[in-house]
Structure formats: structure tokens, C-alpha cells
Image (cartoon, rainbow, N blue to C red; front, top):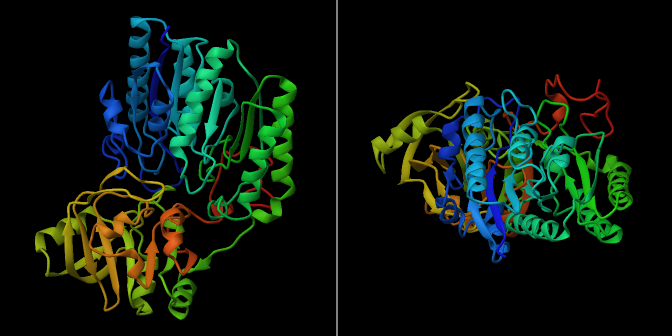
Length: 495
């Protein structure tokens, strides 16, 4: 008999201290991903993209898939209640309709795991509560971003959860496929797996979470080995998103296994491996002035990439602070391309002026009140539409609204857009007519994801601290609701 499986998703990474809230409209037009979609149109919207649900759909085999709703919004402040209620309502209503049409064998949801709604700090936990209230004990699996702030409620309310293994996230589709595979196994298994959950007692700064290198790579490798050694269905390692001000924030591990002893042993082993290496997760970044000077001194074959980590649109930044850009201009950096400044007002002025015009702008600074006054020469205008080509974004449609390439000094060009996107794909630079590998300096608003597509062409990578809310050291943030005893940086005290 053909299995009937409902599929949907609701993805957001919420920064409690970000300057802009996340509105319903941000899910409707999210920038570098498909917009909010429900019903049968879901399948066409995600087909060919890199999102997890696309992998889950492919892995479903001959199952009959019932589409709920799916959406993504770029990281920003907490999700407004209106958005949460409307979108969770779409998912729950779709689930109710699917049940009205016949019995369901399973449900798969594509979630992020670090969403905070105004009224629900553990947004995914609340969504799963509502879903469970409708579907009862029908098997349910979910895929997660590893920046998930994993909670006990999330672990207990699904039959298995699968975070991506990589950061940069180049295995999103694979995680979705694995979650669907586990759902099929759970249906065939006929009973729930035993589960275990444990939180780590310190936060890991975002720039130190990259799985391409130590200190995170050895942990990622150990996770793989321990899952096999203990024979568990899944050993989940969630790095945490250290900008969510609630008691579930932080690093956590979970396991699903045939026996409770297997699940406990896998979780305890990985927890101990991480805890024993706490000191290795300490790290530092260069200040903006030092980073620019270093990049100018160390020119080589290929661009020097500077990551503007603290205004990362993928971490809750608005993508419009100008501290690093101002430093490039001040030091007269030559051959520098700055990607990007999210400023719809300036983009409109540039389009009104036309290519070849010179325009005086108060550029950026809409989120922090510190714009940069520049004389901009308009070199190219675009509609901001392109398709991702790199390891993370291949096939994803981007719609950044009216966009422009401007020159703001003899050596510095800036990509200005109307809708934010993390600078994680070379197509962002190419769509304004620049070949990234030909640049001397590439300044990118990103923390780690840029490495997937830009590391191969980079002569050197520098992580810089310039103004922005995605603070490289989370201990500097004004947390009020974290659990007692959580260390805000490795080897530090929470007090």
C-alpha cells in the first residue's frame, strides 16, 4: 500500500538583539530563497534548489506526498506573532485537511531550530506541540540547521531529528533526504526509538564553528564515528545560535537508538568529547583597520577575502553597516569590491539617476543610524535577480530588488541591493559584471558560509570585527534569560 506522508517547513534563525524584527512579509519575499508557498505549488517552488525539503521529496520514493506550507526568511530579530500564527496556521490547517482526506503514515518538516517568536522563545518546540496535538502519535521527523538551539521539547516531540553536518551548509539536501529516510525507517520499525538529550555548558562563537577546520572539524568527525560505534539511528550535533536570549540557547546533542543504553552512550560520548576540547573553541578576530591594512600588505594571486562577520545577514545583521567599507576608503584600498550594502532607498536613487551618473548618497546605516556619505559613480544597474551557482546556493533563486554597482573611491566598488542576502555565493558578484577571482580584495558580509564558494579562489581569508549586531564574542551581549551556569564564551564564567 502506498504511504501517505505530509511535508512542509518553517525556517528562521532569530537574533534577540538584531535591529529589525522578522515580519510576515519577510517570509513572502525572502531574498535568496523561494518565498512562502502552500499546497501543490510547494513542489515546483523547491524543485532544483538546495533547501532540505527538496532532498526529502526526492528521498520519499513512491510515497504519496501531501504538501502543507513551506517558507524561509533571512535571519533577523524575533518572528512577530502575526507571522508565526499565520504560517503555523497554514501548516496546521494543511495537516488537518490531509487527515480529513485519509490516514497519514508520517510527517516530515523542514525546520531551522533557532527561531524565536515574540510569544514563544522556543518557536519550533511550540510549532511541534501544535502539530502533535493534531496528528497524535503518527511518526514525525524533522531536518534542522546545526545552528539549532536544540531543546528537550523538540527532541521529545519528534521521532528523529537530523541537523546538517556542515558549516558552511553544503549538505542541506542530504539532511532533508536523511530525515525522510529515517521517517520511512520509523514507519517500517513500528515503534519509537529511545532518545537522549544533553546540553553543553558553554557557547561557541560563530566564527569558530566552521566544520572545514579545527576546532569544529574533529568534533564533526567524532560525531560520525560515534554514531556508527553506538549503532544509533541518528546522533545529532547542534552548534547553537549564540544570539537567542532564552534558556534553550547553546550547544546540544541528541540521539535516537534502538535502546535507551545506546542513545545515552552516544550522547554522553559526544558531550564529553566536546567538553574536553572547550579551550580549543576560543578564538579572536581582527579589528577592521588591522584587517584592511593586512589585506593591502599581503596581496597575492587571488583575492584577499575579508569577512564582515558582525553584520552578517545570515546571523541577524541587516547588511547595511558601513564600518568596514569606511576603513577600505580611508586606507585607499585598491581593487576592492564590497558585497554588499542593503539599502533600498539608496538603490532607488541610483536607479533614478541611471548608469554613468554621479550621486551623493548617505549610504547604508539604516539599522544603526550611522550612514556613510559618499559620492557614488553608478557603474551598473540590475534588477537583483540571479540564480545561485555555488556549493550552498546552487539552483536557489535570488531576488534582491533594484541593485547597483557603484564606485565610491578610486579603488573601492560597492554592490548595493534592496533586499538583504548573505554574501555566500559568487553569483552575487558576477551578476553586476565582476569576476570575483579578478578582485584584489573582496569584503563580504558573512561569517562562515562564504567559505564554501569563496575559499577556493581566496589567497587569504581574514575575519574582521566591524560594527553590527552579530557580535563575534557573545559574552558582550546583554543576555537576561539564559540558563544558570552557561558560560558565555569558552573557558569563561557566565556571571
